[in-house]
Image (tube, rainbow, N blue to C red):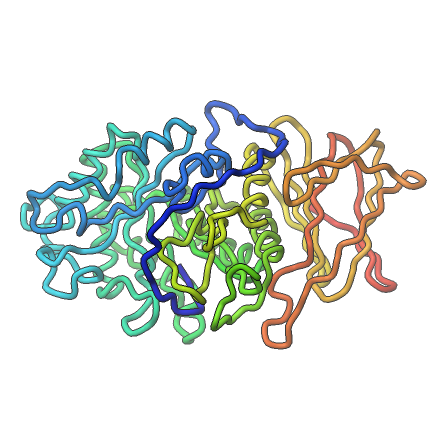
Length: 471
């Protein structure tokens, strides 16, 4: 993941039991054939709490060096406890595997980020340590319901930079992806292979062409790629802190794939969040972005709405709980580090997982002062999400022939709103902005449940009135 503050790790010896107040939420059950697009990273630490979160999938690290610590004949699976997989299945939550960490015996480089030995041999050659591991993992976990595999994590971070996880260059990662695809599809033809999540900003901030663009060009240049599905099924992204970049980064990735003819490839966000630094229970020593607990929740709402509008198929919050976090370190958890109690972000993600799990389409409308997303649900109803982008309040007017519409707050509580002279009037609170970072998260989002029917919405800032256009 993209972190802006170095995390120091310490042992957190006791998992604390918590009791989460149940919420009254709509749309508890999606259609049987539909997978809830909302996910969580590492929810297994608190299975009951994660079940209450009502997400449709969960990402778990399947650590190669723990599966095979001393040689290719090892097969130790306690690092992916069968009880984790069972608890996920019992709660209708799909497990997505992240494969990474090279064992010492399988590399000539540094254990962990080292390039696997034999990587350039045929994928099924006994000397290709990576190919053998992927085949065995995919074959073994198929009977346990695991079919999605993310191939490594953030290979775009260079050595010497915090978050560095892969010692190879782009050509090495391409080869790793190709070998994994061929091995996985041989072991289980229904397996889905995901390109590693990338940070985007590590390249952009250094003036380099994005790693993703260069990787996709390398993939399509391979003469055998087209007959093997271009060696991937899903493109993964990691997006943090700035709400509007969620839409921009997804849109750019989609455009790049379409230009290269990869129009059938899907996009998932495997990590999204904004770590709160203004938290009385957990002060952060070296914050880069200053935000409070409610802003973390607002980022997830805004980011999720924009992700759906940009065409992301699934999206996951990073993460449920920060294990073994040292005092003063940056915390992304939806649960508070000291006692694992739910933060406002937990309830916000629970609300989205329940209310937005059946969105069929979403469109964005934005101006200099307002961002808005209109969602169409399977049952015909609509959800309008809108928030102020700048440091001033915005007035939103909605006109339509409705008996009533409902607002939904961060905790999923609904309230009926009555019109005034046939017009529904709302105030979008100003964003909290800083001199250093600007308005990186918008103001408190307005969430409206709107019944089917015709309506128009306008917003007013000063003397300007602008219509929200979702065409």
